[in-house]
Image 1: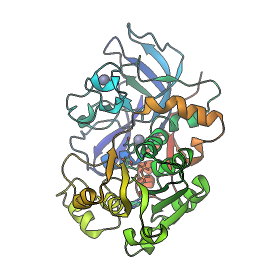
Image 2 (image 1 turned 90 degrees about the vertical axis):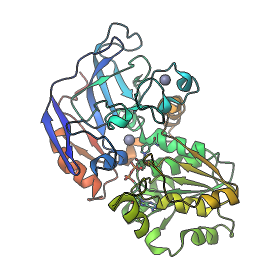
Image 3 (image 1 turned 180 degrees about the vertical axis):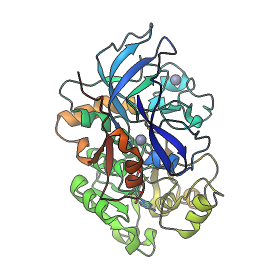
Length: 385
Ligand SMILES: NC(=O)c1ccc[n+]([C@@H]2O[C@H](COP(=O)([O-])OP(=O)(O)OC[C@H]3O[C@@H](n4cnc5c(N)ncnc54)[C@H](O)[C@@H]3O)[C@@H](O)[C@H]2O)c1
Ligand SMILES: [Zn+2]
Ligand SMILES: [Zn+2]
């Protein structure tokens, strides 16, 4: 089969690879119909995630048709078209019982923090991902969700990560009626966070980025105000000026470890990684939120420390909420929003590529060329029959 293949930082290829096989009675083999490249894949592509092994296939956002199931699988069968949350989780451990599926204790030998994720280095379990024609889906009774017949496959693939992650980012903000919510990052996750903030009762939503085309898109997609941080001297003062000098009620970090905007953070977080990534957006979030406000973090950071103003967190009495999203928990509500016409996740898809074009797709998404927002890969074997 054709599959994405990691060769080292900034080097990815499409190769012929052996098709995956059932390795455990609760596995399924899924023929991929759509898969995406995510902002998280860029951290892998840039060589910033520890233990990313040469030969690995990335891809944690995919839909597909079940081709084969292991002997114990009961909830899906051959022929089902499923969307597969990016989390691999057991459904029955201490953490899964609390619906913290992203923190499952049974699927990743390194599971002191995160659980299992498809195609996301050996720090999340070493599973191959879905940027391929076929993928092995472990715990097939708990992860995959059958795509309702009236749900578009392009909407369904957005439900495997970007949309529920943005939704959880807003949820962790504990937004109250009329709150001012500032979202850092106008990528797919930030866009869905902005949209979700309205659904949760925000009175004002402001999105921050420096890519003008993304800010324009955010204005249309999420009917929000925007700030280009290149035009701002001091982010905290700027946001305070916009909020009667109080600060925002909720700030969301949808940027993570590769933020632009501070030379000091870039040099110490990315060039010579002395800290776990450039925490500029988190820094701004902490300083721009009002006293007693909430900072919600879904941007990805590494396991070590970051240079952020923790003293301000204490002295302002902030609540910090953070996690990898637990996708499955949000699906019923999000499918309801889609059916009611309040949300059309596929609107953010700007580019489609064949698997053969993977090097170009990564390059384009990484360099933010051609006004790209969300790229989707469609394998030649993707037909639904
Ligand atoms: N927690 C989770 O479950 C989860 C899931 C998916 C993605 N993520 C993470 O969320 C982040 C965003 O993902 P994405 O797919 O939207 O990525 P993306 O790369 O498409 O978007 C990131 C955006 O942030 C902007 N940006 C850079 N520096 C900034 C700053 N200082 N302030 C404001 N904006 C800034 C960039 O210009 C870009 O538009 C990534 O770190 C990704 O790894 C987390
Ligand atoms: Zn993702
Ligand atoms: Zn579990």
